[in-house]
Length: 111
Length: 120
Image (tube, rainbow over all chains, first blue to last red; front, side):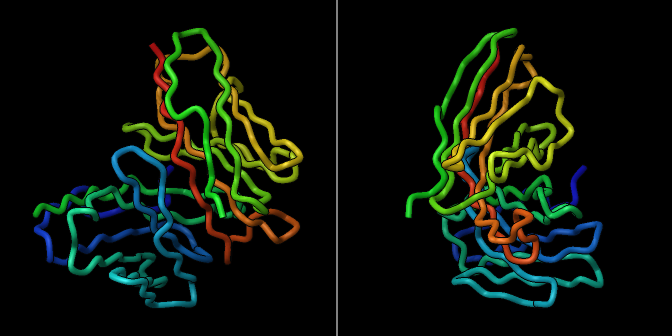
């Protein structure tokens, strides 16, 4: 079963616009990770945010975490066509031995 | 440092056959996990290996098996292939400094490019 659920399922924007994706999860977590996947290829790790962090930045990425609401958001600023991909949030299961993924948000950035 | 590598990248098999996929983790990483990705079910955990031992297994039938070698390289095998086994199979490695395996508070899993398996 999915731990994280991303919202929206699909997002279409123009280059230069910002893209925001949300993730909700069900159980308590130690950290939450965001991954990108280009067209059915491998997953690329973007950022990890720990449960005691509220916000984290990496380049054009900004991730927030609200443990009281069990939710996280990923903001990509000044989107580029190369950002077109599926984005997944993932959390470790209770045993800490497997990542549980949401179904992802498909982002399409047009020039 | 080289990333996670998986071979082969693409594979076509017919129902009833078996298949073996290979994964080489990032140098120094001790934990290797396998995931299956399908359009319908999304990304699902298959199993995880640490120090040549399978420590955790997802909810998959016994036709799915794996092993890990002393150099941390891992293989997964699917026997008696079914059409529904068509998927992208992803391998991930993590440092797992903690003696018990991946540390949920700190570890990042790094994924390989995947093997695209098509069962006809």
